[in-house]
Length: 258
Image: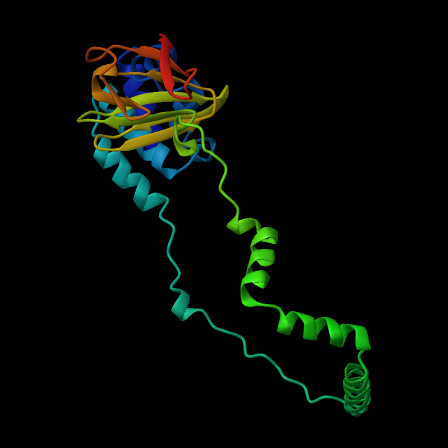
């Protein structure tokens, strides 16, 4: 019996619908169908496949770890040692006679240009020489004052107005999953940034320019920090919570409601 058949049979034997599975596990319906059909390419990646398999199996009363191991065996991708790859030798061809003649012509032209430029440098205009002499005879202090007036790096720096450092502007949200899997969805500046199951001990960080909206399937399993401020847990264990954080007038993030 395949992985998908085990999941589907267990669900049907317990009389559970796909809608009930979606509501209880927080796994989207299309991913549940993909797991039962073993259409694993529909899911974002192998990490999501293993996480959803474990979560769905636990909900049905099956051994999630055994299903994950079975998936690893069936869909294992062998790694290729780069040291064993054969390197094709490069074939070097001897230059043809025409190439040798062309190189000789280029060498002659190069030598001629060198003599031309050397002769031109030896007959530089007198005005340039006199100007160089004036610069050499100029007092060191006067030369330094002129150089200082023209060098923008020696000017006084612009006054920096106080406020939040540029690296701290915007909204920075850190989600620390404690001791239990938690499904979460995060939207940064009105764009979907993440949706999926996160395991215990994993930390997710998101940065936005204007706002961050998040939904936690188990608010009591995730510690929330916003711009360095510890908001703790946004709700009790097993409670689904949504929260929005938007940039304040000072550039920091403020909670604006659930």
